[in-house]
Length: 366
Image (cartoon, rainbow, N blue to C red; front, side, top):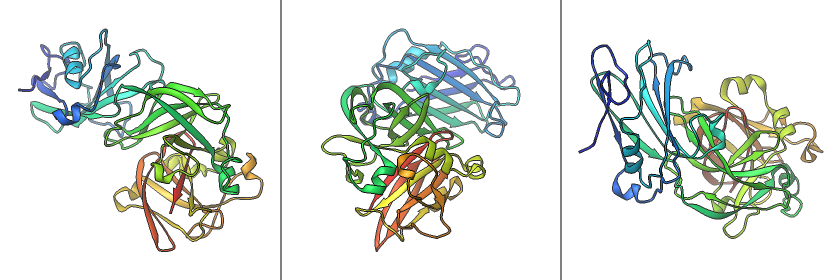
């Protein structure tokens, strides 16, 4: 029998809808899934009660958060620790849903981008006196050794030479991208496991196994801030990585920002710059956002003027309906979109994630 949280004057979260209490059940994953995840690094859990006008009014919510004083190695253990410790009201507009986030930071953290999200939970509220909120895993707490190989995206497109495409700027960190409930916008978590890219490879230790079903393992770049992030491709989609290396294509920030169309970023989100390779840049490739995600972004095709690979200038918009000689395309999005890439009778399906304010680059091998 699941234990329930009670939203009401005498209940767990202290949130009421008129005179009626809303019984909220936090539902842990089944035993098989739960066994894959260690939650012992969770140090804070926060709850958002979304108002009736959310997400149209992004400020229509109320938040509560508690810091945990002892580790809980399972979803159930964390659930037991937070039982009876929240005091959250319902917004004056009413209640449209609930969200919960468990991470290895603190409640008073300036921003979540510096911490790892271990799991989250959400459910819409459509009335009644009960609400089941299922947990979605994001990453296991178990830390392991990893090596990140950052690749200079523009130099590789120009040269197809890994030795000439070494990225050495800033520091790189393990991260995840996951969709926010009710908006589908990606949120960037991570930054604790980081190391300098000066030597061309980054060896570090952190969590990066058992990525949740709705998330992607990513690498974030810090220069003057966390300002670039990319999902880690599968091994068969790497261009320079070998062995167990995690490959991270990195694009020059000046070029990335200069290449974006402000009108499109305002509408869809930041520009994800991609290159179709086979093994060199492929002209004539088409990139299509799958129908289920079609309203989450827009595809454009790009050209690469001489010298851009050195970090000056901008990629230019192509008038074509497929990739040109550089194999370049762009997707404006702040969501995780499923895309189909086709060229020369070959097809690859990929999930490409954009972020609201971060540069992103991706290689697609056919």
